[in-house]
Image (cartoon, rainbow, N blue to C red; front, side):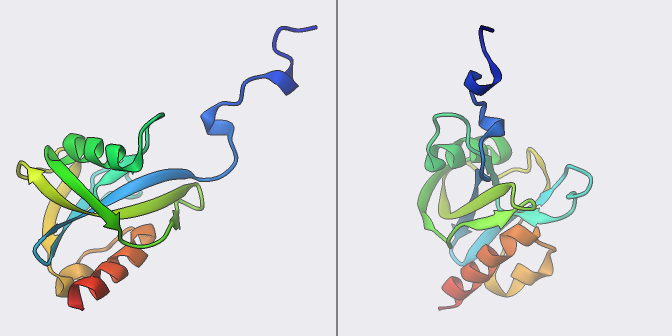
Length: 146
């Protein structure tokens, strides 16, 4: 019998069914929200999103958000509650979970994005958001206007 017959071969993370969880940070400063313009890939460059990214093996969602904000913005953040429910994005390949956050240390700098902007609730529609982020943008606007 072969050492690893196909039916017994270990399952890799990439081959498991279901979307991969990604996290986003809706970083607030008063009523302003930090938005980040994608620099890449080319088909997404210029579209705006919440800073964040994919979870690494063994990470909690809060740990992933803290790591991503250190890498992308050079800041330490405090992570709060979820902004909205799960958001399907990337053609169903990803499940986006956006959390409220605040800068605990540092000043945000665009290390991996083309640009950063602080947007007030009335300015949230002034940039073209990634479609998967739109429900969280709308939920933020409602919460900040309440």
